[in-house]
Image: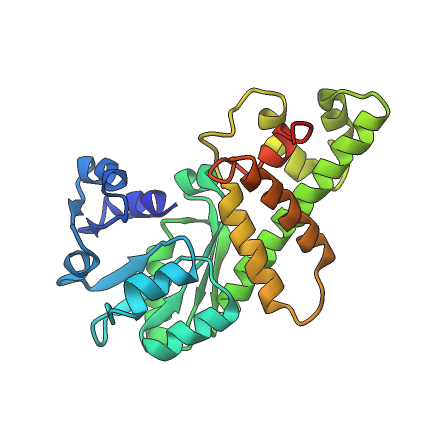
Length: 269
């Protein structure tokens, strides 16, 4: 995701990039970005710093613990984190803006993501909104007053994804119990509330696409779902069920593949 976000900024901004896996930065370097060997080198002389890491623990390791962000430099973080994490990061760095994106790699490549931009600083929010226009679809760019509000917005979006995925899996299992094949089930679901998920993941289910590479990994959605459980003060049984499905895929070695693995490998556990 970070690669796609950076790519949209290349045409109008000078970009220096760093990736924990160095070769993953090469496509951006080939397109005109400068490559840094360390996070400290990447931010040298930067007017704005943008991070896109796996989760809150990586933000602590790469940014917070080494006190990476210089005083007064705007930091836009697109990493999915919990509201408590966002409050922690905002307390540690007063220029912190939480700007999570909603959508997978397809919408990211098209510049059609949903984007939340959360900070109480009006001037910094305007800067971040201006940059995020390159990522967002029409009417999908939303400024909010705090980093924590942006964080809960992203978790709400991914909750819908996780529980709808669980719903589609159960629909497949229900239909199969009556002898229907997957293509018939998907066709029947096209007039239901599950049509979004069935249309998005149908090509994986019917074998037109492979789960590796995919658009959104099991590991990533499982991590986000656990952040939802951690944040809520009430049980989230549908989220818990989805987490259990993701854990099955991780145990089978599909964690780094598209989360449609829960459909593709549903009868192979």
